[in-house]
Length: 402
Image 1 (tube, helix red, strand yellow):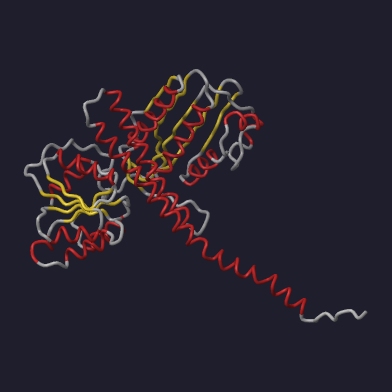
Image 2 (cartoon, rainbow, N blue to C red):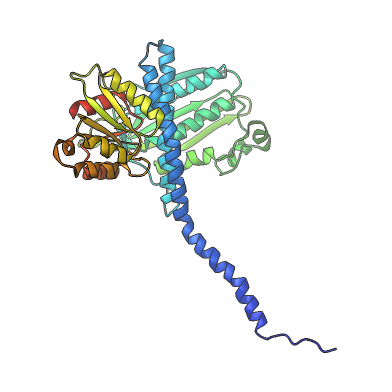
């Protein structure tokens, strides 16, 4: 019996066949970052839509005839929704980052407002668990600072969440004071609980990602073990420190500091400055609203009708162009993100029409607060730009100006 002769080229062919999938996988890997960015951008938009509605409805609720306690709850719901909305932006920023370095935002904000928001969160969570909350906000806090308010708030809320989670009875305290560090401000936040506490050995691995203080803690309380690693990373990026003191059975005290810049005189007042409640408009306007979200329509209609204006709604950019071209409206509210033709292109088309319709004031509505987004809207021909969630005060002023 003759043995079949093996081709000398067969091993080379097999080798090429084995290598081919590697080349394909590599090509796919190169496309992965762009795919992730697109997926996260879509996810962020889908999340922002209900969050903006929650924030806007809670603002309308807080303006209703409520007791002081219920009004505080509505304000807390709005604040939480706004914070989650900002966090979707941070997720996209992280996906776009080409390095592991944490790039901080530079927002102008009031430390006292931030502290009061954290205190409200603590009181609500403590009350729900039958705990008491003790709060001290020092009178010497700076009026305003520049820094990453969103990440700082997220870090503090993580510490508050842990304090409540690991405490079954007693009190949780929150305090904040400021120190000078040259021309800068160091804010020092302290969160102390009377919970289960930790032994010295448990503290050693506390800030490692995916680590819990102990296996028994992980089984009892769950969690991914990422929270404190995130808090420490944010603290280091803000040139601060994260310190902890703890004793088993007696509780834990976390002290977080962050170094923040003083405000630039050229900057406007912080966005969270309170505005007086709007009354009815001096003259009723005919308003066209291009908004495809049904909840957004309810919010806009409630605000505008309360101001005495009449409102018509359309759900697409094409419909907005057609309706505005008829020249029946005093002002157009144009959502930037619309199905089909977006608000930017719809604005360009309206500006290209003839007659008075081409000069109708157009105010953009968008979940994006970046200066580049507003610049693009104004370059297309928009006269104003309002970020979501829509505030009754801000919208009233924007419409009155036009």
